Picture 1 (tube, rainbow, N blue to C red):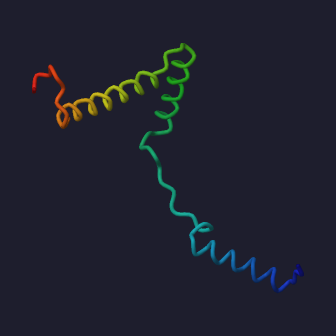
Picture 2 (cartoon, rainbow, N blue to C red; picture 1 turned 45 degrees about the vertical axis):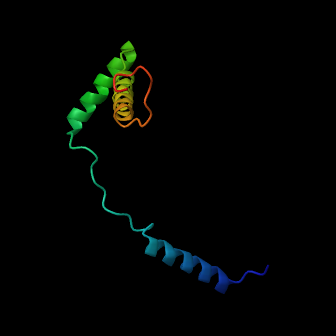
Picture 3 (cartoon, helix red, strand yellow; picture 1 turned 90 degrees about the vertical axis):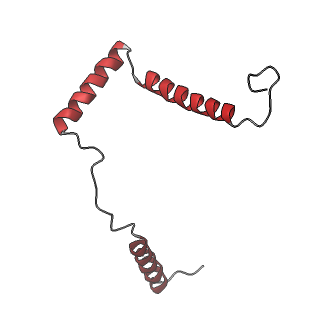
Length: 92
């Protein structure tokens, strides 16, 4: 394949124009993910590091609570809308 300067510039500027149109070169405005002050964020990091060092991680309990809530929600929904009657159940 033969390369030329004209082809190189054509492809380079075409790609750059496409990137500008797609918005990849001009990023959007950055926004904060939290309203915490820097001091409060640092304190959360320090507290979390202390819990980790002591082996008292809260993520396990939080994950378990979420799983329990979702499981209970699904079980109560399936109990209410179960089209199959189970022998010996109170509704039969």
